[in-house]
Length: 89
Image: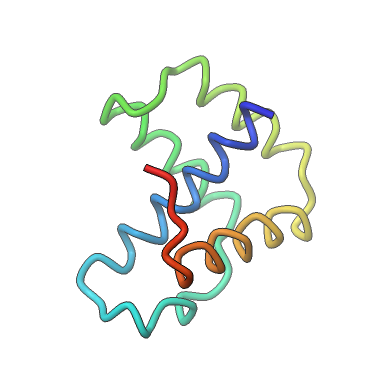
């Protein structure tokens, strides 16, 4: 469960960073987030001290076992939360 929280946080962070200079009404126009995007964001989160290397490794392991449908489901849920303002801090 913890790993899914890390993945969910990652997607929210990615979406927030991508939209930092955009109007909130445009959220959802980014498109699909790939596994490669998520892996890069995990590396950035480690670099910024938001998660540990061990947490990133577990998240990458979990990500590797997920199919594109599962990744899309997490991304879609993150978008719903961003649009509703229900973003964990």
